Length: 175
Image 1 (cartoon, rainbow, N blue to C red):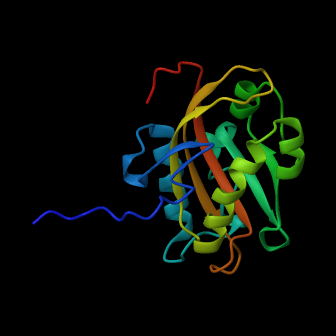
Image 2 (image 1 turned 180 degrees about the vertical axis):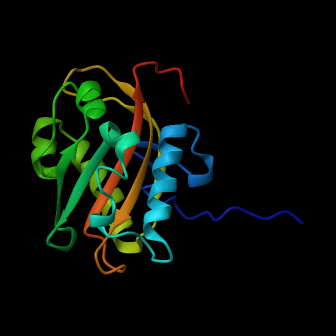
């Protein structure tokens, strides 16, 4: 007997401005895999680690590939607190210190594409991985990526930061 697929529409965060959502186990890049391993080690038995546990020393191998997003006012806004060199190079500009609303003003639609992904991650505290292409950049040069979004929070129940770790390439031939 075959199973029928649920006819309901897919979750908007499954295919998004970040590309296609993939399983954490399907992450192909060793650097992104290492970030997940560090996150898991730092969280121990907790649902997710505290922001303070993710120190520069712990993240040293992938520090230039991070974006640390602060959750502002329980998710009413999000702010890019730290943006690693790899992201600055591929974007051609730094988005550090900007909120999603400010990012949207600079790159129309980009902040709006990220908001439902961040909202859902904050709601369920579940890591997410994506692979795909980003078309809108300050340099007007699209890039491909594989990224993971990892929740962080002081109390183990509320997400107060999102750690994004990604690898980027201008070779758009990757799936």
